Image 1 (cartoon, rainbow, N blue to C red):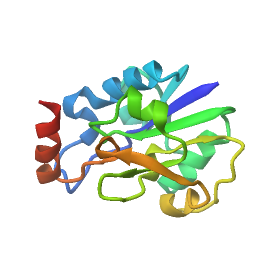
Image 2: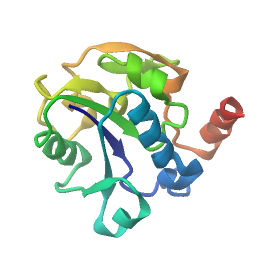
Image 3: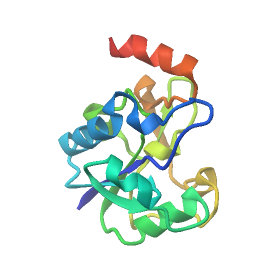
Image 4: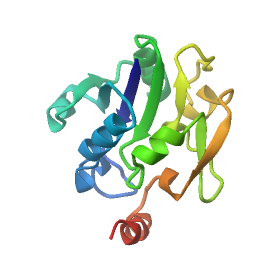
Length: 162
């Protein structure tokens, strides 16, 4: 089984608005994940109050940190997992199909929230996402692997969408 997990847990203080609601990106990511072979898509929505924001299967964060909550969700899945943060506005089915590990963006930064891995691979139990995936190898992702955290970064991303 190939499961997509979209991370859409809350509002962004740096962005000034809920990144998961910009450009209907959660819905778009879910569609791109299906095109790349995901047979199931889950949205980690943060809280129960946010579950009604999305049409996909939603799970509420169950632990203190995102990493611990993600490990909890992954522990209930078998097969391949493809992650996507809700702010991956350029990610598409081509990127998802080509990821084998942790993609690096066009700046050379590892983007663990876009990881693709088998549930049989060893993940580090940690409260930090960067630690959780440190044993998973990197792969090329390019500009499509960029995430967006500020309005200025989003303006730049918009220039690629038009």
